[in-house]
Length: 270
Image (cartoon, rainbow, N blue to C red; front, side, top):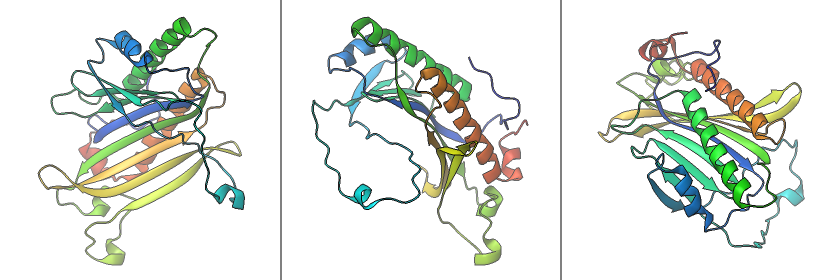
């Protein structure tokens, strides 16, 4: 298992509701019959399965100005049957593996009676296991297939923060509006920033803050942070490093966006 970087902020009980680590790659030679065969290899880790609509490809591009051509409607010609996205789900429903022709995604989800948040190292280790299982399957069953050609990596943290009667400025350091708007009640915020390696833009970090009502009609704040970008090389090893970089950007910015009061409440250790 990969080790947690010592410089990263750490919390004993962070408000994490879901963590996603995934990769997008050039299309796998996946056929409909393969889903059942793959699931057999994942038993008993994933006890149930279901079919979902496939996700569209997503690429972070960095063009100064969109051309008229790029704004025109695009027509996509399908040369083969579109396959579903398979969900393989653990017994307690905390772990979810998503597989489609060009995606492999592992989700950890907070569930009643499920596991406590295992931290990103464990989530990434589970993704590593998933990747090796899929690699082995395709190398054994698809002649000529060698490895993934990864083109995008994605890390997502979704946090649910109970309001408990606190003002926004008591929770979010980036959002202290009391001095401007008076007794501010609620709102939403979206922030996008470009991440660079040296001078070159390679990824984006998206922050979304919005109010929600929980099952007891109590106000909670959902703070989502999404990191998406390209690895330095199209290999799984390079993708793994990009996922770790994404996690670091997310944890650092989560800490920057929230207040010391909340850090204490979440048991900040460093």
